[in-house]
Image 1: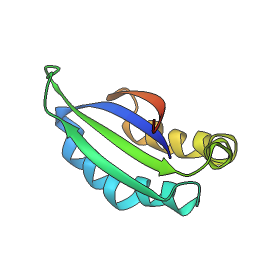
Image 2: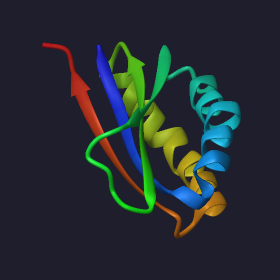
Image 3: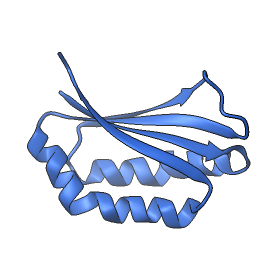
Image 4: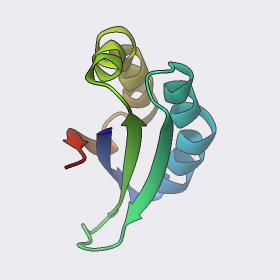
Amino acid sequence: MLYYVVHVYIEEAVATRWLDWMTSVHVPDVLRTRCFDSARLSQLLEPVRPGYKAYQVQYVTTSADRLEEYRQRHAAHLQDEHTQKFAGRFVASRYVYRDL
């Protein structure tokens, strides 16, 4: 299994709106690409960054080919939607993990 993990620090002032949008629009859109089998959204409790809430979305896929398809065909468009909606209000980083 491969895990495409997105860490997001979002300003507290828009965190509720961001979380609603993520669960109702963005994560379902990512899953509709069929590059991932599932997704899990978690909130980071510690360490705290003042003025922000922190979350991670973990997308699960079974192959490097599917992950690469997501990156080549879908990621830019979906990330642009996120950036346009919450520009200047978040910091995001992306990682890929695998099971050992």
